Image (cartoon, rainbow, N blue to C red):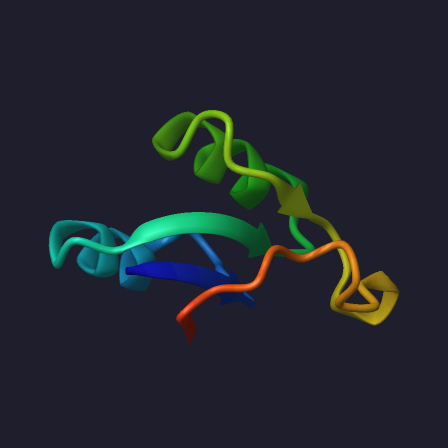
Length: 66
């Protein structure tokens, strides 16, 4: 199953989803240092910086939004 993450923070909830078998397709997190941490934990997964600038068209469709 696939998932996308809004207001991702440092990705602790996402880490649980990964361990439960979910495949992350994107993250949305405004803090640069947290996006850097997400990039380290999930290399190659797109990260978007500001929820106010995301229209939804750029986000891949997923089974779960966290």
